[in-house]
Image 1 (cartoon, helix red, strand yellow):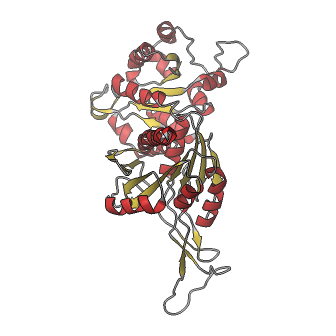
Image 2: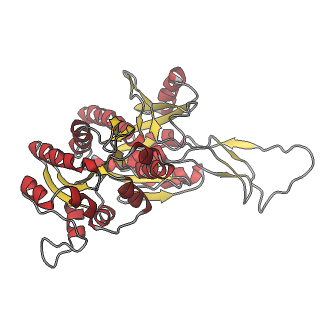
Image 3: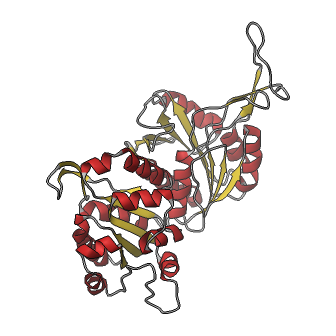
Amino acid sequence: MANIVLGVTGSVACYRACDLARELMRQGHVVRACLTKAASEFVSPALFEALTQQPCLVGVFDEPEPGRMAHIDWARWADLVVVAPATADAINKLAAGIGDDMLTTLCLATEAPWVLAPAMNPAMYSHPATVDALSTLSARAAWIVEPTEGDVACGEHGQGKLASIAAIVEAIGTLTKRSTRLHGKKVLVTSGPTREPIDDVRFVSNRSSGKMGAALAQAALLMGAEVTVVTGPVSTPLPARARVIRVETAIEMLEGARGSAKHSDLIIGAAAVADYRPIDPTPGKSRRGEGTVTLALTQNPDIIAALAKENPRAVAIAFAAEPGEGIDYARLKLHSKGVRAIAINDVSREDIGFESDFNELVWLTENQEVRSGRLPKLACALWLLEHATGELSALNAH
């Protein structure tokens, strides 16, 4: 079971955090509460201390153990940080990296995953600043338990009610139950696009944001793995505990991945690698001329196929970004690439895939064809890794 810091912010719904604390304790977790000053106006720190039999933090200078910095001690102690309810104020501060009280400072200091359960007025929840902040946090692999629709405390109706205790507990259970599935395993993830230079200014690339690769890295860390990410140019944050190798071109990506692939148990080719590169990039900047320009291209190496061949002891998984499901074409890839599985995603849909915080995958092997349903990318990554661990077990059984 897990050590959980329960962050409680100043929403009217904060009284429900008491029930959440009790339910988590019933399941065997150790819970310590950290309240914001606003939350302490609604519920007493003494109540949480009585419920959890653990100290409760409120002020930024609180020190349950004199001489010890509580925000660091608790950040290192926590296996999981749950903020429920999470107000618009707390969400925007965390997205901006602001630590101006005990809870936000503790959150910034921990390397444990976050579960955030927003609760606020519907207009505040749909405000562009809150939407952007939640998108940022989701991209950083925070697990968002979306609020439900209904009547809120101010008398208005809309999406903003704190999710049910059962839904929050389920999200926590999803993360904690998987925390040892990949313990002792080494996972290599290729991520993002590649850039193939036309000249020193222009390049051939694609729309990949690297969000799926980042989610896979975070999910593998949550499941106990040692993770290496070889990534093309992306702005998506990557987990601090992952080893990151940054590259530009497909050739660089293959060379950057080779060393880690030899020792990996699981290799996931989530990168959107350019299939072709210019044969003869122009030094400097090519200038506008008259008429048309012909760009001669040559094939790039098939990175996941090369890595799978280099380490046949590893479970290699390819991604297939298709306009539509493309099952038949993916089956051909399964054989030509020599991988154990292919994850297919439909990039023609605007609600998933490139640049989206959501995805929907088809897991394809010789004997399986399973659909994930539309999920946040972190949930999708965890779903994929659950199937990958099954392939690891099958490979090890032989």
